[in-house]
Image 1 (spheres, rainbow, N blue to C red):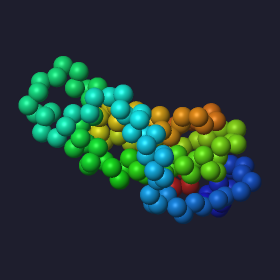
Image 2 (cartoon, rainbow, N blue to C red; image 1 turned 180 degrees about the vertical axis):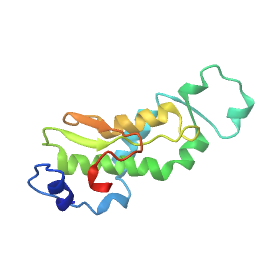
Image 3 (cartoon, rainbow, N blue to C red; image 1 turned 180 degrees about the horizontal axis):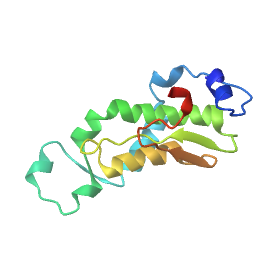
Length: 138
């Protein structure tokens, strides 16, 4: 990482590798996330096919929460690590998590983003268009 930063002439003072991303998040962090999504209607399993809802876009299904539990836990854990290592930063730059259309609902995706950025220093989420623009790779 340090070598790449030098090649692209990006000034840095330190590179810290954080190995604990796969650890399970703390219970209080999970409770905060659950409190955040409680504002959205959570549709119980099987009921989402039976009941016609006009505002289904504003709902999170129980099956979606189960299917994306690992990804949700990773975002919650990232927030814990950001608080631990970057709370005093002037600016945090992070890759915008990519939503998979049809897999994650808008409320759940926005809850992930809120979880990552709430009570943090200025935060810049970046997303590219999948094509490399760095001449290092060409």
